[in-house]
Length: 288
Image (cartoon, rainbow, N blue to C red; front, side, top):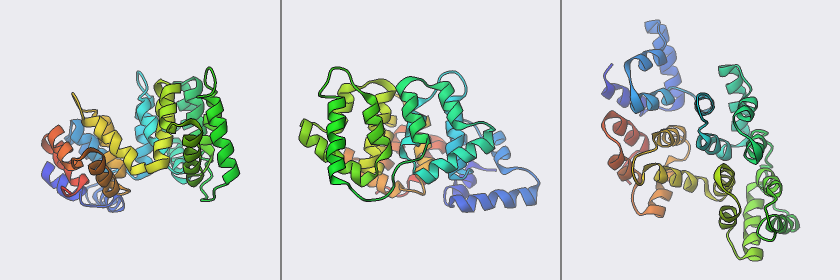
């Protein structure tokens, strides 16, 4: 199978259509299409194609499994996925992970992380965020005070307070909390997190805040950072391009242009090559 054909067919179909192609291939050829592609392809191009052949929860579960197994954990993957998915998406990922890998995602995450970072991930995996739109004004003020008193206003940070507010409250409520926090502390909540925390814990709290404020902007920044400077973090670039292609790619592109004054298309074009570049550009869509 020619790579050009693979790009032409797979990059221009929806996830649902690609699942149908997989079924039809099995019926007519008597082989698994994914296995055939894996044996034919290599490198980053293969990673993109393999990702495209999976449904959304299967791909997320697959990425999480790869991030956990092996030497060292790719914490960025755990953070990118768990901080940005809805309750329903997370529940589906957990069920899929169990089915595909025969293990509990929470157990695997706990076996590979520790401390407060682990507690935040477990809390995100509980998929218990309030997803209503109501804002309790008095509670929002109290939440902002609690976070301020747990961080900026004291020696040492009480991260549990941050965790309770950031992983349970709904989006509209949190946006109100962030406004109140700015009023009380004179700082953006993101700046306080950067001052108060470090490492993976800082990264996961920042990701939650950024996803609440503007999810496409969060992904635009992740893409930008994966490509700017020396070398490309292909794992991040591939994961976001594959996972968001049908979700919010147009919004991500618009945010990217607004934030960096250049198109995502031009960044990918300048940072990748060959068939890998071609398929990513197809997923990105037009140059605008």
